[in-house]
Structure formats: C-alpha cells, structure tokens
Amino acid sequence: MGLKQNLHKLKEKYKGTKMAPAFNAIHTFLYMPNETTHSGSHVRSADDLKRTMNTVIMALIPCLIFGMFNAGYQHYLALGDIQAANGDFFSANFWNWNNLTVGLWKVLPLVLISYGVGLAVEFVFAVIKGHEVEEGYLVTGMLVPLIVPIDIPLWMLVIAVIFGVVIGKEVFGGTGMNILNPALTIRAFLFFAYPTWMSGDKVWVHGAVASTGQPDAISGETILGSLAQGNPAGYDWLDMFYGFIPGSVGETSTLLILLGGLFLIFTKIGSWRIMLSAVVGALVMGFIFNGVVDAGWISETSKFYGLMSTEFWQHLLIGGLAFGIVYMATDPVTASQTNKGKWFYGFLIGFISVLIRVFNPAYPEGVMLAILLMNVFAPTIDHYVLQGNIKRRMKRLKVKTA
Image (cartoon, rainbow, N blue to C red):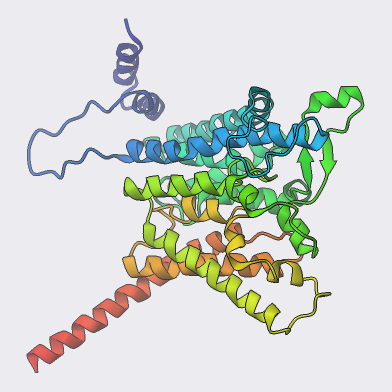
C-alpha cells in the first residue's frame, strides 16, 4: 500500500483528536488536498497557499545555490588558493565543484535546522491548539539560512528559530495573523542576543583547515564595515552586482535577486509597487547624502563620511538591502494592503534603510530594522489611506446631493 493511502488511513483514524492536525499537515505538504466543492457558488483559482509558498521558494533557490558556491569561493580566496573572478560571472574559479562542496557542507545544516526546528514548533502548536498547520513557514524556513552569517553556531539558530516562530507568529494566531515578518524576527533576535556573531567582520574558512594550522576564520571587514570606517570597498561594482563578495548566504548576488524579483512580479506573488518604491526611497536617501558630501557640509574625518560619500546607486549592491526589498518587504501578511499604501510603505523602507545604514555606529546595515519598523506601521498607513478615500467619496456625495 502506498504512502498516500497510509496517510489517508491515519487521517481518518485520528480524525477529531489532537493529533489530527499533524497528520493533515503531512498529507497537505506531500499531496494536493483531495477536498472539492460540490454545491453553491465558489471562486475557483489554480492558486493556493502552498503553490504561493512554493513559487517564492523557486525564486529563492538560485540565491541559495549561488550562496553555496560563494561560500566555498570566499573560503579558497581568503586562503589564497584561487584567483579572484574579477567581474567574470562565468569564471571557472567561482563555478567550481570544490566551492560547491565546501558551501554545501556549511549551508545545508542551516537549512535543515531552520526547517526541522521551525516545523516542529508549528506541529506542536497545531496539536496543542487544535488548528491546521499552514504552509507559511515553508518560505520562512528558506529565508532564515539565507539571511544569517554562514558561520553562526547551530545552537544559536535553534534558539532563534524557536523564538521567531513562537513570539513572531504563533502568539498572534499563526500564519496570516502575525504583524512582524517571522524571518526578520529571527534575525533581529540573533542581532540583539548575539551581536558579535552577527557583525560579519570575518571571512569564514572551512573548519577542516584548522587541523593544518590555518585559522578557521580570517579577519576582514565586510564592504559595509569598510565603508563605515572610511576605507574603500575593495571590490568593483561588477563584483558587487554579481555577488563575488562576502556576506550572508543569499544576499550577495544583486543579479539573481533582481531576476527573482522579476519572477515574483511576473507570477503576481510580489508587489512591484513595494519593490519599485523601496528602490526609489533608497536612491533618494543616498542621493541626499551624496549632496551633503558634495556641498562640503561634512568633514572627511567624520565617522559618517564613508557611507555618505558612497555612490547612491551602490547602496543597492551592498549589504542585504536588495534581498530585503524583494523577498521580505513584499511579505503580503505584514506589508501594506492598499495600493497607495504600498507606495508609502516601500518608499519609507528604502529611505530608512539607508538612513540607518549611515548613522548606525555599531552595525552598518538598516534594512532589517527598517522593514520591521514599517511592519508595525503598515496598518496605520492603510488606515489613513482608507480614511482619505472615504473622505473624498463623502465630498463627492455631498456635491451630488447639494
């Protein structure tokens, strides 16, 4: 007897018990729901929550695979075993199976921990509260290993995932009820609880090298860290665009993030209004800072000069700004719901991201805090948009009845 038939029998056996949501979740995860409508009027669509989540995962897979190659590439590059790709996206030094092997060895445990622990917490809450397990964590489980440093200890990730799922989602009622993006809640917990591990000031090197007397990490600031200290980035714009730079697993390649964003827009999963307005907001804030520098209003000795003088468009190529705009600012649950609200919401995310990036003395990145902040204000933005629409309609109504 096949697995599907066995699961169906278990569903029927435990129907009405506390364990029913767990078996229903396994069945839904592996197979299409077998319930169909029989009467009445219904709106039918080929899309559902699982297909939506799977579409986002498809957009994330290229970033994951590239991140694995880049982890191995940064490892061998830091040790001096290979030459830099120098803006060649098809360089054999980058697309090398040895790079993939090293990256896979380090990244795969992050993915397994993220999904294993997160889904376990979801199942526990489903059994305790007696509700179905939704597919919302499918995307969160993929996002988490892409936005954390590759060398983060696994036990820290376990604690952070439990915190993020419980505090960031389940206490609000589960999928669709949370006010904060769960993946960013997990990263925020790591940022505040273990700041030294989230600084990203070292290039990770495979642990096996330590047995030969080589260090397991090589000191060196990230691009944002270097610019914040007034030092040059050390990479040309092509390296930053393609992603041949140190950083969290999924955030380095702006090219693949751009392609993923276009895919989400084409499939109508991601909001192009949020993406476009966030990019405009980041460019405007960067342009303002460039204008301040060009006007001579800030000294070259100022600790803010490095990132202020960075070309405004380069802010989209460094750090996690592009990744956050495409994959997390567009979260349909925590983002603004009205079309006009999405313009304000996205613009403020980009604007505040660059603002925090420049003026944050401890950690030169701002997209995480900007998105979480705007998650909180998204309902307020929608409220005022709706109130504005109501007032305009009331005025038109008064004119017609006068």
